[in-house]
Length: 610
Image (cartoon, rainbow, N blue to C red):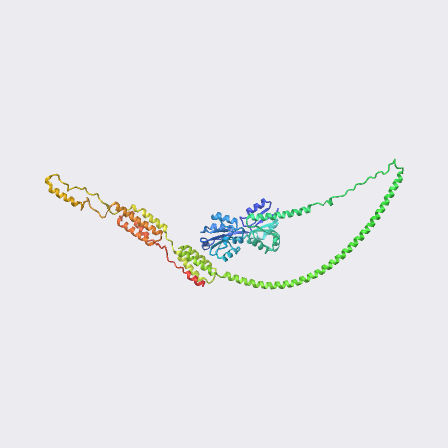
């Protein structure tokens, strides 16, 4: 029963161990690495807000980022290197991630949606170190790439000196490795004898990259088996397939060894032949003594003849064997001479070849050294140089967010990304100073509390009907006495004539009298209603102006509403005081919807890029 050792970090590989034990293997969990979580700064996490594509390298990357709870654009396209990582993304963020057919960096970069990423904002959520292939290729394709490092792998140091002794004592047959960091953790601290034993073990790895890295540790390719990925199912399939192959081979060998030979077990059995009396006493008249003498003589004669025959045959066989040996000696002598001649020729050819190979190796070594120096210089130049196009593109993005979208926080985030990019390169102090000045200016701009102001206006609007007017209602008209009524008495004709004249005049001019003392102003119910509606109209107009970001209309509407309240309502009433105070506070609001902001870094970036 093969013993398989699983070296994945703690908490992983449990499912693989269960599968192996159910299949008849002996499985042990022995983590050689531990995962240490990191805490990125807000500047490092800010690219997640405006990311177009987010790539997760592993399940640990997803879990750590979920614990940090950053502001993340869930509308971005998510990518996962493997199926288990994609499942973790959906469980943490509720987003379906794209998965390559081949669970590695090459498979991810082969996806069609990552083929054309020119100008895209891509965030790579990963661990410390690791392969740079994804970042390098995406940058070459024109993407703006940000690395978000959220964890690192560290070797487990408790049992470093006794690892191999413990494994060897437990008859470990195969070792599961899913990262180059695990290879370093296992092989780096070992002495030569321990490495020699370890190199004879079977290794089950997650990719060809790890297999090539294992070969650098002098592990034979025949002892390395590559799975279809790092998942537990892929590893189990690889181990089980290799185990089945080895079992069939061992069975065939065992069968050959244990098959008995029939020649060794079969034995010829000879049974003594009992002599019978050949002559019937009644038919033959020879005496018993004569018969016995004849038999003895025959036996002696046959023995002497047989011995002579044996000696004769032995002599002939010996002569033939001697002749055969002589012939074989002659042939062997000729073959030895031919071998000596061939050996001398081979030694001469090897000597000549060694000279040529040594000369070629020295020449190639010098040429390779020169090429290596040139490549190192080129790599250093590329690593230390800064792409002006990337810097200019980020600056233009900041300007677009400022002038077109009026997104001051987004502009500040882009400038912080630009500052982080420039911080890794010398000669950018002046540009960074201008960028930091712009960031401070943008961060100091406070957004208008539109919602709060709108709710205050609505509160004032609902309290208008509760205000008390400072005028009284018009009194009822006094009872009208018709002094011009005509009399039925004929002698009053003169009075009747006067009364008729007065009625004619009253049809053109009316003079009425009211009882009581008049108070100014006097307002009817309709006038009161119209005043209330006018104040409400002004407050509604102020709300509309606030939502449409028209500051002048907002303040004009507030001023007119305040004037009407002060003119028509009692100033000593609590409701009136509350409304006037609220309107005064609203007039003090700083509605700077479009602040004038000039980016100082724009000119500095242009001067630096030239």
